[in-house]
Amino acid sequence: MTSYHLRGASPARTRADAVVVGAWQSTNGVSLADGAGEVGSAYGRSLRPLLSTLGFTGKPGDVARLPTDGKLSSPLLVLVGLGEKPADRPAQVLAVRRAAGAAARSTANAASVALALPADDAGLIRNVLEGYLLGGYVFSRYQAKSPDKRVGTVSLLSPIARRQEASRAFDEAQVVAAAVNAARDWVNTPAGDLTPPTFADEITRAVKGTEVEVTVLDDAALAALGCGGLLGVGGGSSAPPRLVELRYSPSEPVAHIALVGKGITFDSGGLSIKTAAGMETMKSDMAGAATITQATLAVARLGLPVRVTAYACLAENMVSGSAMRPGDVLTMYGGTTVEVLNTDAEGRLVLADGLVRAAEQEPDVIIDVATLTGHMVQSLGNRVGAVFGSEDVVGSVILAGRESGEKHWPMPMPQDVVDRVHGSKIADLAQYDSTRWGGGLFAAAFLREFTRERPWAHLDIAGPGFHSGAAVGHWTPGGTGFGVTTLVDYARALGEAP
Image 1: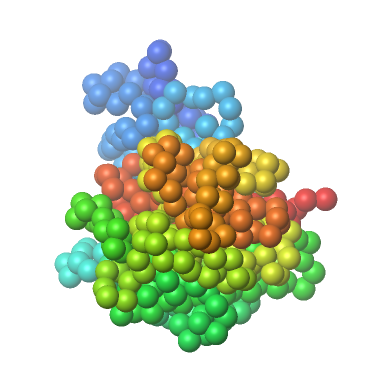
Image 2: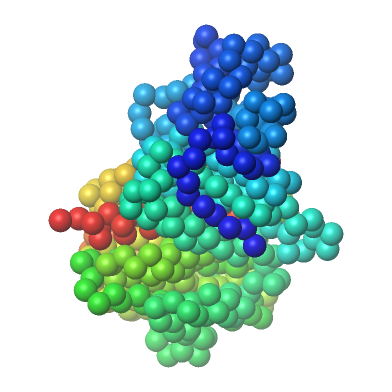
Protein backbone atom coordinates (compact mmCIF):
# COMPACT_ATOMS: atom_id res chain seq x y z
CA MET A 1 0.00 0.00 0.00
CA THR A 2 1.50 3.31 -1.09
CA SER A 3 1.53 6.20 1.38
CA TYR A 4 1.42 9.83 0.20
CA HIS A 5 2.89 12.86 1.95
CA LEU A 6 2.93 16.61 1.27
CA ARG A 7 6.18 18.16 2.43
CA GLY A 8 7.97 21.49 2.24
CA ALA A 9 11.47 20.00 2.04
CA SER A 10 14.16 20.84 -0.50
CA PRO A 11 14.58 18.30 -3.31
CA ALA A 12 18.35 18.52 -2.93
CA ARG A 13 18.16 17.47 0.74
CA THR A 14 15.26 15.01 0.58
CA ARG A 15 16.07 11.36 1.25
CA ALA A 16 14.27 9.15 -1.27
CA ASP A 17 15.28 6.49 -3.75
CA ALA A 18 14.52 8.95 -6.55
CA VAL A 19 13.81 12.66 -6.70
CA VAL A 20 11.89 13.99 -9.72
CA VAL A 21 12.28 17.48 -11.17
CA GLY A 22 10.91 19.12 -14.29
CA ALA A 23 12.73 20.77 -17.17
CA TRP A 24 11.47 23.23 -19.77
CA GLN A 25 12.61 23.06 -23.38
CA SER A 26 13.96 26.23 -25.00
CA THR A 27 16.17 27.40 -27.85
CA ASN A 28 18.95 28.01 -25.31
CA GLY A 29 18.80 24.48 -23.98
CA VAL A 30 17.15 22.92 -20.98
CA SER A 31 16.10 25.04 -18.02
CA LEU A 32 15.01 23.52 -14.72
CA ALA A 33 11.46 24.28 -13.67
CA ASP A 34 10.29 25.85 -10.43
CA GLY A 35 11.01 23.64 -7.46
CA ALA A 36 14.37 22.42 -8.76
CA GLY A 37 16.60 25.43 -8.02
CA GLU A 38 18.75 23.76 -5.37
CA VAL A 39 19.17 20.73 -7.62
CA GLY A 40 20.60 22.95 -10.35
CA SER A 41 22.94 24.60 -7.86
CA ALA A 42 24.17 21.20 -6.64
CA TYR A 43 25.19 20.20 -10.18
CA GLY A 44 26.39 23.63 -11.26
CA ARG A 45 27.50 24.20 -14.84
CA SER A 46 27.99 20.50 -15.51
CA LEU A 47 24.28 19.72 -15.70
CA ARG A 48 23.45 21.18 -19.13
CA PRO A 49 26.32 19.53 -21.03
CA LEU A 50 25.57 16.26 -19.26
CA LEU A 51 21.93 16.38 -20.33
CA SER A 52 22.95 17.32 -23.86
CA THR A 53 25.24 14.29 -24.00
CA LEU A 54 22.33 12.11 -22.93
CA GLY A 55 20.12 13.59 -25.66
CA PHE A 56 17.67 15.07 -23.14
CA THR A 57 15.98 18.13 -24.66
CA GLY A 58 13.13 18.72 -22.23
CA LYS A 59 10.42 17.93 -24.78
CA PRO A 60 7.22 16.31 -23.46
CA GLY A 61 7.85 12.66 -22.63
CA ASP A 62 11.63 13.03 -22.31
CA VAL A 63 13.09 11.36 -19.24
CA ALA A 64 16.68 11.36 -18.01
CA ARG A 65 17.89 9.31 -15.03
CA LEU A 66 21.13 10.46 -13.41
CA PRO A 67 23.05 8.96 -10.48
CA THR A 68 23.67 11.88 -8.13
CA ASP A 69 27.08 10.70 -6.84
CA GLY A 70 26.46 12.40 -3.50
CA LYS A 71 25.43 15.76 -4.96
CA LEU A 72 21.91 15.22 -3.61
CA SER A 73 20.56 13.28 -0.64
CA SER A 74 18.75 11.03 -3.11
CA PRO A 75 20.92 8.57 -5.08
CA LEU A 76 18.91 9.08 -8.29
CA LEU A 77 17.77 12.25 -10.07
CA VAL A 78 14.96 11.86 -12.60
CA LEU A 79 14.37 14.75 -14.98
CA VAL A 80 11.11 14.83 -16.94
CA GLY A 81 10.48 17.08 -19.93
CA LEU A 82 7.73 19.70 -19.74
CA GLY A 83 8.09 20.96 -23.31
CA GLU A 84 8.28 24.63 -24.24
CA LYS A 85 6.93 26.80 -21.45
CA PRO A 86 3.52 28.12 -22.56
CA ALA A 87 2.24 31.56 -21.65
CA ASP A 88 -1.21 30.50 -20.42
CA ARG A 89 -1.80 28.71 -17.15
CA PRO A 90 -4.03 25.84 -18.42
CA ALA A 91 -1.30 24.73 -20.81
CA GLN A 92 1.33 24.93 -18.05
CA VAL A 93 -0.85 22.88 -15.73
CA LEU A 94 -1.35 20.25 -18.42
CA ALA A 95 2.40 20.09 -19.04
CA VAL A 96 3.04 19.48 -15.33
CA ARG A 97 0.26 16.88 -15.16
CA ARG A 98 1.67 14.97 -18.14
CA ALA A 99 5.22 15.14 -16.76
CA ALA A 100 4.04 13.71 -13.45
CA GLY A 101 2.49 10.81 -15.34
CA ALA A 102 5.75 10.11 -17.15
CA ALA A 103 7.56 10.31 -13.81
CA ALA A 104 5.31 7.63 -12.33
CA ARG A 105 6.30 5.13 -15.00
CA SER A 106 9.98 6.07 -14.77
CA THR A 107 10.17 5.48 -11.01
CA ALA A 108 7.94 2.42 -10.72
CA ASN A 109 10.71 0.26 -9.20
CA ALA A 110 11.70 2.76 -6.51
CA ALA A 111 10.70 2.17 -2.90
CA SER A 112 10.33 5.92 -2.28
CA VAL A 113 9.90 8.88 -4.62
CA ALA A 114 10.01 12.64 -4.05
CA LEU A 115 8.19 14.79 -6.63
CA ALA A 116 9.69 18.27 -7.01
CA LEU A 117 7.70 19.40 -10.03
CA PRO A 118 6.21 22.93 -10.05
CA ALA A 119 3.73 22.97 -7.14
CA ASP A 120 3.56 26.48 -5.72
CA ASP A 121 -0.23 26.72 -5.69
CA ALA A 122 -3.11 24.42 -4.85
CA GLY A 123 -4.02 23.76 -8.50
CA LEU A 124 -0.51 22.62 -9.35
CA ILE A 125 -0.34 20.42 -6.25
CA ARG A 126 -3.53 18.73 -7.34
CA ASN A 127 -2.32 18.20 -10.90
CA VAL A 128 1.11 16.88 -9.92
CA LEU A 129 -0.41 14.24 -7.67
CA GLU A 130 -3.29 13.36 -10.00
CA GLY A 131 -0.91 13.13 -12.94
CA TYR A 132 1.38 10.83 -10.98
CA LEU A 133 -1.45 8.60 -9.79
CA LEU A 134 -3.00 8.38 -13.25
CA GLY A 135 0.28 7.90 -15.10
CA GLY A 136 1.20 4.98 -12.87
CA TYR A 137 -2.08 3.16 -13.47
CA VAL A 138 -1.79 -0.45 -14.69
CA PHE A 139 -4.67 -2.82 -15.48
CA SER A 140 -3.24 -6.23 -14.60
CA ARG A 141 -6.31 -8.17 -13.46
CA TYR A 142 -5.88 -10.83 -16.13
CA GLN A 143 -2.08 -11.16 -15.94
CA ALA A 144 -1.00 -14.04 -13.72
CA LYS A 145 2.63 -12.88 -13.49
CA SER A 146 2.11 -9.15 -13.30
CA PRO A 147 4.77 -7.72 -10.95
CA ASP A 148 3.75 -5.39 -8.12
CA LYS A 149 5.57 -2.15 -8.95
CA ARG A 150 3.81 0.11 -6.48
CA VAL A 151 6.06 2.67 -4.80
CA GLY A 152 6.05 2.46 -1.00
CA THR A 153 6.20 6.19 -0.25
CA VAL A 154 5.49 9.21 -2.45
CA SER A 155 6.34 12.69 -1.18
CA LEU A 156 5.15 15.76 -3.05
CA LEU A 157 7.44 18.72 -2.32
CA SER A 158 5.85 22.16 -2.32
CA PRO A 159 6.82 25.55 -0.86
CA ILE A 160 3.22 25.98 0.35
CA ALA A 161 2.93 22.51 1.89
CA ARG A 162 1.80 23.84 5.29
CA ARG A 163 -1.08 25.90 3.95
CA GLN A 164 -4.62 24.63 4.40
CA GLU A 165 -5.50 24.98 0.71
CA ALA A 166 -2.45 22.91 -0.22
CA SER A 167 -3.41 20.09 2.13
CA ARG A 168 -6.97 20.16 0.86
CA ALA A 169 -5.85 19.99 -2.79
CA PHE A 170 -3.50 17.12 -1.94
CA ASP A 171 -6.28 15.10 -0.28
CA GLU A 172 -8.82 15.86 -3.00
CA ALA A 173 -6.40 14.79 -5.72
CA GLN A 174 -6.25 11.31 -4.22
CA VAL A 175 -10.06 11.06 -4.22
CA VAL A 176 -10.42 12.23 -7.81
CA ALA A 177 -7.56 10.11 -9.16
CA ALA A 178 -9.03 7.03 -7.46
CA ALA A 179 -12.36 7.76 -9.16
CA VAL A 180 -10.71 8.11 -12.58
CA ASN A 181 -8.76 4.88 -12.13
CA ALA A 182 -11.89 3.05 -10.97
CA ALA A 183 -13.64 4.18 -14.15
CA ARG A 184 -10.64 2.91 -16.12
CA ASP A 185 -10.92 -0.49 -14.42
CA TRP A 186 -14.53 -0.83 -15.57
CA VAL A 187 -13.79 0.33 -19.11
CA ASN A 188 -10.86 -2.09 -19.40
CA THR A 189 -12.81 -5.10 -18.13
CA PRO A 190 -13.74 -7.53 -20.94
CA ALA A 191 -17.40 -7.34 -21.94
CA GLY A 192 -17.97 -10.99 -21.08
CA ASP A 193 -17.19 -10.15 -17.45
CA LEU A 194 -19.12 -6.86 -17.37
CA THR A 195 -22.62 -7.47 -18.71
CA PRO A 196 -25.41 -5.04 -17.77
CA PRO A 197 -26.49 -7.06 -14.68
CA THR A 198 -22.86 -7.52 -13.61
CA PHE A 199 -22.09 -3.84 -14.13
CA ALA A 200 -25.13 -2.92 -12.04
CA ASP A 201 -23.79 -5.16 -9.27
CA GLU A 202 -20.36 -3.52 -9.56
CA ILE A 203 -21.90 -0.07 -9.16
CA THR A 204 -23.92 -1.23 -6.17
CA ARG A 205 -20.74 -2.50 -4.49
CA ALA A 206 -18.87 0.72 -5.30
CA VAL A 207 -21.55 2.81 -3.58
CA LYS A 208 -21.17 1.01 -0.25
CA GLY A 209 -19.62 3.19 2.43
CA THR A 210 -20.63 6.45 0.73
CA GLU A 211 -23.61 8.76 1.19
CA VAL A 212 -24.91 7.78 -2.25
CA GLU A 213 -28.17 5.84 -2.54
CA VAL A 214 -28.61 3.37 -5.39
CA THR A 215 -31.63 1.84 -7.12
CA VAL A 216 -31.30 -0.81 -9.83
CA LEU A 217 -34.21 -1.19 -12.27
CA ASP A 218 -34.21 -4.60 -13.95
CA ASP A 219 -35.81 -5.46 -17.28
CA ALA A 220 -39.20 -6.16 -15.66
CA ALA A 221 -39.17 -2.74 -13.98
CA LEU A 222 -38.05 -1.11 -17.23
CA ALA A 223 -40.94 -2.74 -19.07
CA ALA A 224 -43.40 -1.51 -16.46
CA LEU A 225 -42.05 2.03 -16.86
CA GLY A 226 -42.05 1.87 -20.65
CA CYS A 227 -38.32 2.37 -21.17
CA GLY A 228 -38.37 1.35 -24.83
CA GLY A 229 -34.87 2.54 -25.59
CA LEU A 230 -33.13 0.30 -23.08
CA LEU A 231 -35.41 -2.63 -23.82
CA GLY A 232 -35.06 -2.24 -27.59
CA VAL A 233 -31.27 -2.07 -27.55
CA GLY A 234 -30.90 -4.81 -24.95
CA GLY A 235 -33.47 -7.13 -26.50
CA GLY A 236 -30.95 -9.03 -28.61
CA SER A 237 -28.76 -10.03 -25.66
CA SER A 238 -29.10 -12.88 -23.18
CA ALA A 239 -27.92 -10.37 -20.54
CA PRO A 240 -30.91 -8.03 -20.01
CA PRO A 241 -30.61 -4.25 -19.62
CA ARG A 242 -30.46 -2.32 -16.38
CA LEU A 243 -30.99 1.29 -15.34
CA VAL A 244 -28.95 2.22 -12.27
CA GLU A 245 -30.09 5.38 -10.49
CA LEU A 246 -27.80 7.11 -7.99
CA ARG A 247 -28.71 9.89 -5.57
CA TYR A 248 -26.39 12.07 -3.51
CA SER A 249 -28.27 14.57 -1.34
CA PRO A 250 -26.14 16.76 0.98
CA SER A 251 -27.91 18.55 3.80
CA GLU A 252 -27.89 22.03 2.26
CA PRO A 253 -27.28 21.74 -1.50
CA VAL A 254 -26.71 24.93 -3.46
CA ALA A 255 -27.47 23.30 -6.82
CA HIS A 256 -28.77 20.10 -8.40
CA ILE A 257 -27.00 18.29 -11.26
CA ALA A 258 -28.42 15.31 -13.13
CA LEU A 259 -25.90 13.06 -14.90
CA VAL A 260 -26.79 10.50 -17.55
CA GLY A 261 -24.29 7.97 -18.93
CA LYS A 262 -24.30 5.62 -21.90
CA GLY A 263 -23.50 2.12 -20.68
CA ILE A 264 -23.38 -0.17 -23.71
CA THR A 265 -21.29 -2.96 -22.22
CA PHE A 266 -20.59 -4.33 -25.70
CA ASP A 267 -21.61 -2.97 -29.06
CA SER A 268 -21.72 -5.44 -31.94
CA GLY A 269 -23.76 -2.94 -33.93
CA GLY A 270 -26.80 -5.21 -33.68
CA LEU A 271 -28.30 -6.21 -37.03
CA SER A 272 -26.48 -3.21 -38.57
CA ILE A 273 -23.40 -5.17 -37.57
CA LYS A 274 -19.94 -3.70 -37.24
CA THR A 275 -16.82 -5.08 -38.92
CA ALA A 276 -14.57 -7.32 -36.85
CA ALA A 277 -12.04 -4.51 -36.47
CA GLY A 278 -14.82 -2.13 -35.47
CA MET A 279 -15.69 -4.35 -32.49
CA GLU A 280 -12.19 -4.66 -31.04
CA THR A 281 -12.58 -1.87 -28.49
CA MET A 282 -16.35 -2.00 -28.06
CA LYS A 283 -16.03 -3.16 -24.46
CA SER A 284 -15.34 0.55 -23.88
CA ASP A 285 -18.77 1.68 -25.09
CA MET A 286 -19.91 1.90 -21.46
CA ALA A 287 -17.35 4.61 -20.61
CA GLY A 288 -20.06 7.25 -20.21
CA ALA A 289 -21.81 5.24 -17.49
CA ALA A 290 -18.50 4.58 -15.75
CA THR A 291 -17.67 8.29 -15.90
CA ILE A 292 -20.90 9.62 -14.43
CA THR A 293 -20.95 6.94 -11.71
CA GLN A 294 -17.42 7.61 -10.51
CA ALA A 295 -17.92 11.38 -10.74
CA THR A 296 -20.99 11.06 -8.50
CA LEU A 297 -19.04 9.00 -5.95
CA ALA A 298 -16.17 11.51 -6.01
CA VAL A 299 -18.55 14.43 -5.43
CA ALA A 300 -19.98 12.57 -2.45
CA ARG A 301 -16.58 11.66 -1.01
CA LEU A 302 -15.46 15.28 -1.35
CA GLY A 303 -18.62 16.41 0.42
CA LEU A 304 -19.44 19.04 -2.20
CA PRO A 305 -22.67 20.96 -1.46
CA VAL A 306 -24.28 19.89 -4.72
CA ARG A 307 -27.13 17.43 -5.11
CA VAL A 308 -26.46 14.81 -7.78
CA THR A 309 -28.85 12.36 -9.39
CA ALA A 310 -27.22 10.02 -11.89
CA TYR A 311 -28.56 7.50 -14.38
CA ALA A 312 -26.34 4.73 -15.77
CA CYS A 313 -28.15 3.32 -18.82
CA LEU A 314 -26.84 -0.23 -19.25
CA ALA A 315 -27.49 -2.55 -22.19
CA GLU A 316 -25.63 -4.93 -24.50
CA ASN A 317 -26.20 -4.43 -28.23
CA MET A 318 -26.10 -7.93 -29.72
CA VAL A 319 -27.35 -9.92 -32.71
CA SER A 320 -30.09 -12.51 -32.26
CA GLY A 321 -33.63 -13.34 -33.31
CA SER A 322 -34.93 -10.97 -30.64
CA ALA A 323 -32.75 -8.02 -31.66
CA MET A 324 -34.42 -4.80 -32.77
CA ARG A 325 -34.61 -4.29 -36.51
CA PRO A 326 -34.12 -1.28 -38.77
CA GLY A 327 -37.61 0.06 -39.34
CA ASP A 328 -38.87 -0.81 -35.86
CA VAL A 329 -40.61 1.90 -33.84
CA LEU A 330 -39.76 2.15 -30.13
CA THR A 331 -41.67 4.06 -27.48
CA MET A 332 -39.27 5.83 -25.14
CA TYR A 333 -39.89 6.46 -21.47
CA GLY A 334 -42.32 9.38 -21.44
CA GLY A 335 -44.16 8.31 -24.59
CA THR A 336 -42.12 9.69 -27.51
CA THR A 337 -41.97 7.27 -30.45
CA VAL A 338 -38.76 6.76 -32.40
CA GLU A 339 -38.19 5.09 -35.77
CA VAL A 340 -35.02 2.97 -35.67
CA LEU A 341 -33.08 3.13 -38.93
CA ASN A 342 -29.63 1.93 -37.84
CA THR A 343 -29.19 -0.43 -34.90
CA ASP A 344 -25.55 0.64 -34.56
CA ALA A 345 -26.75 4.08 -33.43
CA GLU A 346 -28.01 2.57 -30.21
CA GLY A 347 -26.45 4.82 -27.59
CA ARG A 348 -28.88 7.68 -28.16
CA LEU A 349 -31.78 5.28 -27.57
CA VAL A 350 -30.71 4.22 -24.07
CA LEU A 351 -29.77 7.81 -23.20
CA ALA A 352 -33.24 8.98 -24.20
CA ASP A 353 -34.83 6.94 -21.40
CA GLY A 354 -32.28 8.23 -18.89
CA LEU A 355 -32.64 11.86 -19.98
CA VAL A 356 -36.40 11.86 -19.47
CA ARG A 357 -35.97 10.25 -16.05
CA ALA A 358 -33.41 12.94 -15.21
CA ALA A 359 -35.57 15.80 -16.47
CA GLU A 360 -38.46 14.67 -14.27
CA GLN A 361 -36.37 15.62 -11.24
CA GLU A 362 -36.22 19.23 -12.51
CA PRO A 363 -32.48 19.64 -11.90
CA ASP A 364 -30.66 22.91 -12.48
CA VAL A 365 -28.68 21.25 -15.26
CA ILE A 366 -28.48 17.90 -17.05
CA ILE A 367 -25.19 16.57 -18.42
CA ASP A 368 -24.99 13.34 -20.40
CA VAL A 369 -21.73 11.60 -21.24
CA ALA A 370 -21.32 9.03 -23.99
CA THR A 371 -18.91 7.40 -26.41
CA LEU A 372 -21.55 8.30 -28.95
CA THR A 373 -20.35 8.88 -32.51
CA GLY A 374 -17.42 8.14 -34.76
CA HIS A 375 -18.22 11.46 -36.43
CA MET A 376 -16.76 13.31 -33.44
CA VAL A 377 -13.58 11.24 -33.57
CA GLN A 378 -13.21 12.18 -37.23
CA SER A 379 -13.85 15.84 -36.38
CA LEU A 380 -11.76 16.29 -33.22
CA GLY A 381 -9.39 13.33 -33.03
CA ASN A 382 -8.83 11.14 -30.00
CA ARG A 383 -7.73 13.73 -27.42
CA VAL A 384 -10.63 16.19 -27.48
CA GLY A 385 -14.23 15.73 -26.41
CA ALA A 386 -17.20 17.41 -28.11
CA VAL A 387 -19.75 19.45 -26.14
CA PHE A 388 -23.24 20.33 -27.35
CA GLY A 389 -26.11 22.03 -25.60
CA SER A 390 -27.13 25.18 -23.76
CA GLU A 391 -24.54 27.88 -24.40
CA ASP A 392 -23.88 28.76 -20.76
CA VAL A 393 -23.61 25.11 -19.70
CA VAL A 394 -21.28 24.29 -22.60
CA GLY A 395 -19.01 27.18 -21.65
CA SER A 396 -18.92 26.12 -18.01
CA VAL A 397 -18.11 22.52 -18.92
CA ILE A 398 -15.20 23.63 -21.10
CA LEU A 399 -13.85 25.81 -18.27
CA ALA A 400 -14.21 22.96 -15.80
CA GLY A 401 -12.07 20.71 -17.97
CA ARG A 402 -9.19 23.16 -18.32
CA GLU A 403 -7.84 22.85 -14.78
CA SER A 404 -7.19 19.13 -15.26
CA GLY A 405 -6.25 19.28 -18.92
CA GLU A 406 -9.40 17.68 -20.32
CA LYS A 407 -10.06 19.46 -23.59
CA HIS A 408 -13.59 19.90 -24.90
CA TRP A 409 -14.71 21.69 -28.05
CA PRO A 410 -18.11 23.39 -28.51
CA MET A 411 -20.22 22.05 -31.36
CA PRO A 412 -23.39 23.46 -32.99
CA MET A 413 -26.87 22.05 -33.58
CA PRO A 414 -28.14 23.89 -36.70
CA GLN A 415 -31.85 24.03 -37.41
CA ASP A 416 -31.54 21.93 -40.56
CA VAL A 417 -30.13 19.09 -38.43
CA VAL A 418 -32.97 19.48 -35.93
CA ASP A 419 -35.40 19.23 -38.84
CA ARG A 420 -33.78 15.95 -39.90
CA VAL A 421 -34.45 14.49 -36.44
CA HIS A 422 -38.14 15.22 -37.04
CA GLY A 423 -38.01 13.61 -40.48
CA SER A 424 -39.66 10.27 -39.71
CA LYS A 425 -42.90 9.63 -41.61
CA ILE A 426 -44.23 7.06 -39.13
CA ALA A 427 -42.94 8.15 -35.68
CA ASP A 428 -42.34 11.30 -33.67
CA LEU A 429 -38.60 11.23 -34.27
CA ALA A 430 -36.04 9.56 -36.53
CA GLN A 431 -33.19 7.92 -34.66
CA TYR A 432 -30.86 8.16 -37.67
CA ASP A 433 -30.86 9.16 -41.30
CA SER A 434 -28.74 8.28 -44.30
CA THR A 435 -27.34 11.80 -44.81
CA ARG A 436 -23.59 11.43 -44.84
CA TRP A 437 -22.77 14.70 -43.10
CA GLY A 438 -23.21 15.90 -39.54
CA GLY A 439 -23.95 12.59 -37.86
CA GLY A 440 -22.61 13.76 -34.49
CA LEU A 441 -24.75 16.89 -34.70
CA PHE A 442 -27.79 14.77 -35.52
CA ALA A 443 -27.20 12.58 -32.45
CA ALA A 444 -26.96 15.60 -30.15
CA ALA A 445 -30.08 17.16 -31.63
CA PHE A 446 -31.90 13.88 -31.07
CA LEU A 447 -30.87 13.80 -27.41
CA ARG A 448 -32.04 17.36 -26.81
CA GLU A 449 -35.58 16.26 -27.62
CA PHE A 450 -35.63 14.33 -24.32
CA THR A 451 -34.31 17.02 -21.98
CA ARG A 452 -37.68 18.77 -21.59
CA GLU A 453 -35.93 22.07 -22.24
CA ARG A 454 -33.82 21.89 -19.06
CA PRO A 455 -30.34 23.49 -19.22
CA TRP A 456 -28.26 20.68 -20.72
CA ALA A 457 -24.96 19.61 -22.18
CA HIS A 458 -23.98 16.48 -24.09
CA LEU A 459 -20.36 15.30 -23.86
CA ASP A 460 -19.30 13.01 -26.70
CA ILE A 461 -16.14 11.24 -25.51
CA ALA A 462 -15.90 8.68 -28.33
CA GLY A 463 -12.39 9.90 -29.12
CA PRO A 464 -10.74 10.44 -25.73
CA GLY A 465 -12.65 7.77 -23.79
CA PHE A 466 -10.28 4.96 -24.84
CA HIS A 467 -6.56 5.22 -25.61
CA SER A 468 -5.29 2.55 -27.99
CA GLY A 469 -1.67 3.68 -28.17
CA ALA A 470 1.30 3.55 -25.81
CA ALA A 471 1.31 5.43 -22.53
CA VAL A 472 1.72 9.18 -22.91
CA GLY A 473 1.75 11.66 -20.06
CA HIS A 474 -0.96 10.78 -17.55
CA TRP A 475 -2.78 8.56 -20.09
CA THR A 476 -2.10 4.85 -20.06
CA PRO A 477 -3.34 2.26 -22.60
CA GLY A 478 -7.06 1.43 -22.45
CA GLY A 479 -9.78 3.39 -20.73
CA THR A 480 -8.80 6.93 -19.81
CA GLY A 481 -11.55 7.90 -17.37
CA PHE A 482 -11.96 11.04 -19.49
CA GLY A 483 -14.72 13.28 -18.16
CA VAL A 484 -14.59 12.36 -14.47
CA THR A 485 -12.43 15.33 -13.47
CA THR A 486 -14.45 17.67 -15.69
CA LEU A 487 -17.70 16.68 -13.98
CA VAL A 488 -16.17 16.93 -10.51
CA ASP A 489 -14.73 20.37 -11.26
CA TYR A 490 -18.06 21.46 -12.73
CA ALA A 491 -19.79 20.42 -9.51
CA ARG A 492 -17.06 22.09 -7.47
CA ALA A 493 -17.57 25.35 -9.34
CA LEU A 494 -21.33 25.20 -8.73
CA GLY A 495 -20.71 24.56 -5.06
CA GLU A 496 -18.38 27.54 -4.77
CA ALA A 497 -20.51 29.96 -6.82
CA PRO A 498 -21.80 32.99 -4.86
